[in-house]
Length: 358
Image (cartoon, rainbow, N blue to C red):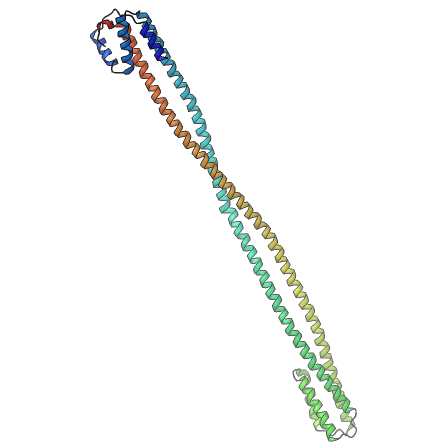
């Protein structure tokens, strides 16, 4: 547009009838130091030497000033629009960065203060329950070993008592045949008594009776049926006591078996309860771990969102800085050009360019 106006100026150049005074010459010299002022003054000089109409030149310069002012207004308007856009984008990206920082911090707080401690607590609970289970199985093994040892002792005790009963029966059978016993029969009977003593030796409550019978039998020739009857009665008394001991031991064994089975049942129930709790806590642990992974994924996503928003904010700031520099340079140039044109316009109206040197 400027070139078109200059062509119009070149076509419509006219001479200026007034002389430049000394002050006007200074203005001309100053304007000649600028490219745009030099161009206008040279056109004015050409206009003066070719006899152009002054009013055409003045009108062309006025139109030029108006166009430059319109261009300056457009530059100001466009920069205002760009500034509003920048402020909006800057606010948006800054808010996105701040929101992401809040989400990241909240996630970190939840992980550090809630989920991580919760996970460690659940792991500790599972380990504790597993320790309980291990102790439970050790207790089962110990109880089983004790039961086996008690059962072996019971069997050994009953075997000894049965041997004592058998020896007692043998002695009673032998006594029932003694009417005029021989020395061999007496010795055999005494041997049976010693055999009984050997069998019941661990059971002190019967030991005194057997020793008394042995002493009595060793002093008798068994010709007195009254003495034999006393010995038979004592042997029967002893036999009944041993049988009672067998029955008591058997009953105790049955009770011990029942107690053992009840104890094992209790331990198995405790073990099953521990396992139930482990299963429950494991489900809670898995849910907590899944929650941790969700928070970590969310945290990573929000960190990525933050990085993106920060990058967009930095890019927008850089672009706006470039746009501002372009705006400032263009605005300053237009302001200078308008100022130079207005000064040149004032000279064109007041100076006779045919009489000055440009």
